[in-house]
Image 1: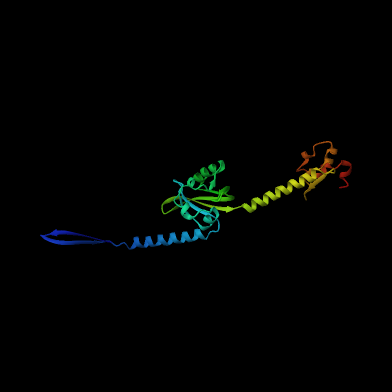
Image 2 (image 1 turned 30 degrees about the vertical axis):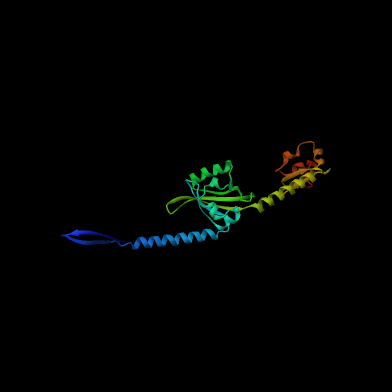
Length: 219
Protein backbone atom coordinates (compact mmCIF):
# COMPACT_ATOMS: atom_id res chain seq x y z
CA UNK A 1 0.00 0.00 0.00
CA UNK A 2 1.69 3.20 -1.20
CA UNK A 3 1.14 6.72 0.12
CA UNK A 4 3.03 9.74 -1.19
CA UNK A 5 3.09 13.48 -0.55
CA UNK A 6 5.03 16.50 -1.83
CA UNK A 7 6.86 18.35 0.95
CA UNK A 8 9.47 21.09 1.09
CA UNK A 9 12.80 20.26 2.69
CA UNK A 10 15.62 22.84 2.89
CA UNK A 11 13.85 24.92 0.26
CA UNK A 12 13.50 22.03 -2.10
CA UNK A 13 10.31 20.24 -3.14
CA UNK A 14 10.58 16.60 -2.26
CA UNK A 15 8.39 13.54 -2.56
CA UNK A 16 7.92 11.53 0.57
CA UNK A 17 6.63 8.02 -0.01
CA UNK A 18 5.55 5.36 2.46
CA UNK A 19 4.77 1.73 1.78
CA UNK A 20 2.95 -0.83 3.92
CA UNK A 21 3.05 -4.56 3.45
CA UNK A 22 -0.57 -5.73 2.99
CA UNK A 23 0.20 -9.30 1.99
CA UNK A 24 -1.64 -10.69 5.02
CA UNK A 25 -4.71 -8.55 4.34
CA UNK A 26 -4.84 -9.58 0.70
CA UNK A 27 -4.45 -13.22 1.70
CA UNK A 28 -7.26 -12.87 4.26
CA UNK A 29 -9.51 -11.26 1.62
CA UNK A 30 -8.71 -14.08 -0.81
CA UNK A 31 -9.58 -16.72 1.77
CA UNK A 32 -12.80 -14.88 2.58
CA UNK A 33 -13.82 -14.81 -1.11
CA UNK A 34 -13.06 -18.52 -1.43
CA UNK A 35 -15.01 -19.27 1.75
CA UNK A 36 -18.01 -17.28 0.50
CA UNK A 37 -17.86 -19.04 -2.87
CA UNK A 38 -17.68 -22.44 -1.15
CA UNK A 39 -20.59 -21.54 1.12
CA UNK A 40 -22.70 -20.36 -1.81
CA UNK A 41 -21.91 -23.53 -3.77
CA UNK A 42 -22.83 -25.65 -0.75
CA UNK A 43 -26.11 -23.82 -0.17
CA UNK A 44 -27.20 -24.19 -3.76
CA UNK A 45 -26.36 -27.90 -3.80
CA UNK A 46 -28.88 -28.58 -1.01
CA UNK A 47 -32.04 -30.09 -2.47
CA UNK A 48 -34.37 -28.65 0.20
CA UNK A 49 -35.46 -24.99 0.15
CA UNK A 50 -33.00 -22.91 2.20
CA UNK A 51 -32.95 -19.25 3.16
CA UNK A 52 -30.59 -16.99 5.12
CA UNK A 53 -31.86 -13.78 6.71
CA UNK A 54 -30.62 -11.06 9.04
CA UNK A 55 -31.93 -11.94 12.49
CA UNK A 56 -32.40 -8.31 13.55
CA UNK A 57 -34.09 -6.88 10.43
CA UNK A 58 -35.64 -10.10 9.06
CA UNK A 59 -34.19 -9.24 5.65
CA UNK A 60 -33.50 -12.09 3.24
CA UNK A 61 -29.78 -12.25 2.46
CA UNK A 62 -29.79 -15.30 0.21
CA UNK A 63 -31.93 -18.23 -0.92
CA UNK A 64 -30.93 -21.35 -2.80
CA UNK A 65 -32.26 -22.66 -6.10
CA UNK A 66 -34.61 -25.11 -4.37
CA UNK A 67 -36.20 -22.22 -2.46
CA UNK A 68 -36.76 -20.32 -5.71
CA UNK A 69 -38.31 -23.39 -7.35
CA UNK A 70 -40.55 -24.16 -4.37
CA UNK A 71 -41.78 -20.61 -3.76
CA UNK A 72 -42.26 -19.54 -7.37
CA UNK A 73 -40.50 -16.23 -6.67
CA UNK A 74 -37.25 -15.27 -8.37
CA UNK A 75 -34.17 -14.65 -6.25
CA UNK A 76 -34.39 -10.94 -7.12
CA UNK A 77 -37.94 -10.83 -5.74
CA UNK A 78 -36.80 -12.24 -2.39
CA UNK A 79 -33.23 -11.17 -1.56
CA UNK A 80 -33.16 -7.77 0.10
CA UNK A 81 -36.82 -7.98 1.12
CA UNK A 82 -38.12 -8.42 4.64
CA UNK A 83 -40.17 -11.45 5.67
CA UNK A 84 -43.48 -9.59 5.59
CA UNK A 85 -42.75 -8.05 2.17
CA UNK A 86 -42.79 -11.51 0.58
CA UNK A 87 -45.85 -13.37 1.96
CA UNK A 88 -44.27 -16.82 1.98
CA UNK A 89 -44.66 -18.06 5.54
CA UNK A 90 -48.08 -18.63 7.05
CA UNK A 91 -47.18 -17.98 10.68
CA UNK A 92 -49.16 -19.13 13.69
CA UNK A 93 -48.83 -18.95 17.45
CA UNK A 94 -46.57 -22.01 17.31
CA UNK A 95 -44.13 -20.19 15.01
CA UNK A 96 -44.03 -17.22 17.40
CA UNK A 97 -43.10 -19.60 20.21
CA UNK A 98 -40.50 -21.21 17.94
CA UNK A 99 -38.87 -17.81 17.35
CA UNK A 100 -38.52 -17.22 21.09
CA UNK A 101 -37.00 -20.70 21.41
CA UNK A 102 -34.61 -19.89 18.55
CA UNK A 103 -33.36 -16.78 20.34
CA UNK A 104 -32.88 -18.61 23.63
CA UNK A 105 -31.46 -21.96 22.40
CA UNK A 106 -30.01 -21.05 19.00
CA UNK A 107 -31.99 -23.64 17.06
CA UNK A 108 -35.46 -25.00 16.42
CA UNK A 109 -35.66 -28.41 14.76
CA UNK A 110 -38.49 -30.19 12.94
CA UNK A 111 -41.22 -27.58 13.27
CA UNK A 112 -44.22 -27.83 10.94
CA UNK A 113 -45.19 -24.76 8.90
CA UNK A 114 -46.91 -23.76 5.66
CA UNK A 115 -45.36 -22.03 2.67
CA UNK A 116 -47.68 -20.08 0.39
CA UNK A 117 -46.22 -19.97 -3.11
CA UNK A 118 -46.44 -17.05 -5.50
CA UNK A 119 -49.25 -18.91 -7.28
CA UNK A 120 -51.19 -19.22 -4.00
CA UNK A 121 -50.62 -22.93 -3.35
CA UNK A 122 -50.02 -23.99 0.25
CA UNK A 123 -47.18 -26.45 0.87
CA UNK A 124 -46.75 -28.15 4.27
CA UNK A 125 -43.09 -28.21 5.27
CA UNK A 126 -40.94 -29.39 8.15
CA UNK A 127 -38.48 -26.62 9.04
CA UNK A 128 -35.21 -26.55 10.96
CA UNK A 129 -33.78 -23.16 11.87
CA UNK A 130 -30.43 -22.21 13.39
CA UNK A 131 -28.67 -19.01 14.40
CA UNK A 132 -25.23 -18.47 12.91
CA UNK A 133 -22.74 -15.71 12.20
CA UNK A 134 -21.74 -14.93 8.63
CA UNK A 135 -19.08 -12.28 8.00
CA UNK A 136 -19.69 -10.83 11.44
CA UNK A 137 -23.44 -10.63 10.91
CA UNK A 138 -25.96 -12.52 13.04
CA UNK A 139 -28.15 -14.55 10.69
CA UNK A 140 -30.90 -17.13 10.78
CA UNK A 141 -30.74 -20.08 8.38
CA UNK A 142 -33.90 -22.04 7.67
CA UNK A 143 -34.18 -25.31 5.78
CA UNK A 144 -37.68 -26.49 4.79
CA UNK A 145 -38.58 -30.01 3.69
CA UNK A 146 -41.76 -30.58 1.67
CA UNK A 147 -43.95 -33.06 3.59
CA UNK A 148 -46.96 -32.93 1.24
CA UNK A 149 -46.68 -36.63 0.44
CA UNK A 150 -46.47 -37.55 4.12
CA UNK A 151 -49.53 -35.44 4.89
CA UNK A 152 -51.45 -37.13 2.07
CA UNK A 153 -50.48 -40.55 3.41
CA UNK A 154 -51.64 -39.53 6.90
CA UNK A 155 -54.94 -38.35 5.45
CA UNK A 156 -55.45 -41.60 3.52
CA UNK A 157 -54.66 -43.58 6.66
CA UNK A 158 -57.12 -41.54 8.68
CA UNK A 159 -59.83 -42.02 6.04
CA UNK A 160 -59.09 -45.76 5.95
CA UNK A 161 -59.35 -46.00 9.74
CA UNK A 162 -62.61 -44.06 9.74
CA UNK A 163 -64.00 -46.35 7.01
CA UNK A 164 -62.99 -49.47 8.95
CA UNK A 165 -64.50 -48.05 12.14
CA UNK A 166 -67.81 -47.25 10.40
CA UNK A 167 -67.98 -50.80 8.97
CA UNK A 168 -67.16 -52.32 12.34
CA UNK A 169 -69.71 -50.23 14.19
CA UNK A 170 -72.43 -51.21 11.72
CA UNK A 171 -71.81 -54.92 12.29
CA UNK A 172 -74.41 -56.87 14.29
CA UNK A 173 -71.62 -58.97 15.81
CA UNK A 174 -68.81 -58.05 18.18
CA UNK A 175 -65.47 -57.19 16.58
CA UNK A 176 -62.39 -57.34 18.78
CA UNK A 177 -58.83 -56.39 17.85
CA UNK A 178 -56.20 -57.90 20.15
CA UNK A 179 -52.43 -57.52 19.78
CA UNK A 180 -49.79 -60.23 20.16
CA UNK A 181 -49.54 -59.56 23.89
CA UNK A 182 -53.25 -60.30 24.26
CA UNK A 183 -54.21 -56.70 25.03
CA UNK A 184 -57.50 -55.34 23.73
CA UNK A 185 -57.03 -52.57 21.19
CA UNK A 186 -60.44 -52.10 19.60
CA UNK A 187 -64.06 -53.08 20.25
CA UNK A 188 -66.95 -52.40 17.90
CA UNK A 189 -70.23 -53.79 16.64
CA UNK A 190 -73.79 -53.78 17.93
CA UNK A 191 -73.13 -57.04 19.77
CA UNK A 192 -70.91 -55.31 22.29
CA UNK A 193 -74.05 -54.15 24.07
CA UNK A 194 -74.64 -57.77 25.08
CA UNK A 195 -71.74 -57.53 27.52
CA UNK A 196 -73.89 -55.37 29.78
CA UNK A 197 -71.09 -52.90 30.55
CA UNK A 198 -68.87 -50.43 28.73
CA UNK A 199 -66.19 -52.59 27.17
CA UNK A 200 -64.28 -49.46 26.14
CA UNK A 201 -63.05 -49.38 29.74
CA UNK A 202 -61.07 -52.55 29.01
CA UNK A 203 -59.07 -51.09 26.11
CA UNK A 204 -55.36 -51.59 26.73
CA UNK A 205 -55.97 -54.41 29.21
CA UNK A 206 -55.87 -58.17 28.69
CA UNK A 207 -58.63 -59.44 26.42
CA UNK A 208 -59.01 -62.46 28.69
CA UNK A 209 -60.96 -60.22 31.07
CA UNK A 210 -63.87 -60.33 28.63
CA UNK A 211 -63.98 -64.13 28.77
CA UNK A 212 -66.29 -65.72 31.32
CA UNK A 213 -64.31 -67.16 34.28
CA UNK A 214 -65.69 -70.65 33.53
CA UNK A 215 -64.16 -70.50 30.05
CA UNK A 216 -60.84 -68.84 30.86
CA UNK A 217 -59.15 -72.16 31.59
CA UNK A 218 -60.04 -73.28 28.09
CA UNK A 219 -58.26 -70.32 26.49
